[in-house]
Figure 1: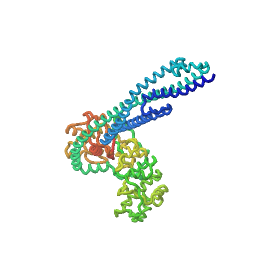
Figure 2: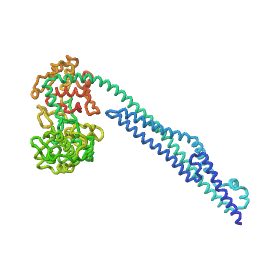
Figure 3: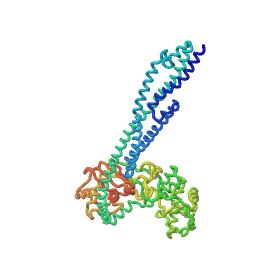
Figure 4: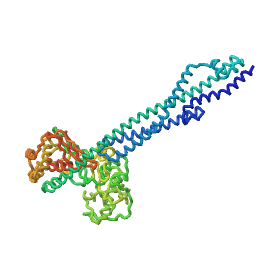
Length: 592
């Protein structure tokens, strides 16, 4: 009685691998590189790796596209854009398009296979959903009529049917899942590739707009350059013709170029609020600076941001720090004769001793380098801001933190042949370092972060001390009539005779003397030369990438007027009342 069961079991074990293999081959007919893998689990892993590769390529393109889009956005808001940057972005977009085309071609090649696989999956799902247990007819179709004629008992038949159904269903479900996973991955990757293509086209379009804008700006700049070159010759001639009194005014209002931290006022000073409206203010970025070498407040800001003294020196001088062995034992100091070199460094009053350690070390190295190069020239070094401020009282009682900075950097000097110049506040731009910022200017300027009182200031005092004489003014603001007078003075400066230009000076003669035209007289003279200004609706400035205000633009009752930055600064300083002045080549104008 057990023979029929044994026979059926053997028949089942013989036929089952064939049936499973048939199912696998039916599916594999539509596969590609994974088709020769018979084990479904291994095949599923193969397809997962294949789609993981495609997905990784798409992810790489996505990241590159996002990076390029950000660069285009950043360049669109930058002060200047180099053509090389445009070309580099074009090359990146072309490379991404090439990769994306390869991916799309691969996906297109699989498109036909996917249609067949979708058809197979749907057929299997319909069949699997309709089928329950095997009928006698199904059983005979698979095992043959001989298996049924063996007179299997009901229990034997049910057991064999159950085992077969469970094995077949398990493999069918697994096959459907493999197909479903592959189809879903294909559809997802196809959509991602289509989206990326559209986004790359958008990035290419934005880049084209930027490129056209750059070309337009270049053509405009070339035209302006030619025009400005002609004006510069005329401007130089007019400067050479100004009176000695006017030259004195310009020199005094321009300020010196040797302001250092040692003589700074408290940062608590604040520009007074305008007492009327509209009010016009002239604000300088930095002052009393030569723009060369280290900004002391910039060094403070960098040190507070975590940079060490070597990084600070590297930025400001484009040189590394090195050690030397040939320092003199003594240095000639004006008014003191030969002093011990280290003692001289202890007495330098150029930076507050409570500033960050790395700022103090950078200052010590810059000061040592400056003194060393001065000694090499064979001259006695002066003790004022024209050289380096030296105080014997400080050398005799040197603050501990400054002494440590000098001692810790002993024998250290800036490499190269730099004279190691430095000044308090440059306005956020130095040479050769460039823009001295962390982020965009002016908000990201290190001098601003370090709270330099000179970073952005409307000057109306006689010198760099905010509490010095103001020629009777309690604020730096100009009325609309006074600002219109500046424009009228510019008209006379630009078109007037030498005798008329000689009358351009501050009307506050109590401080300056001279014989200036009154505001009404200047307006009348400007009218004689073609344009008299009375109303100013707005004012704006253009800052070049070289740290200079290049243009000033006014909207007036006579239309728009644009004046070159250096010409406006000259006329403004000649005519502005009292000690109101622009003391930096980098400046701003406000209308409140």
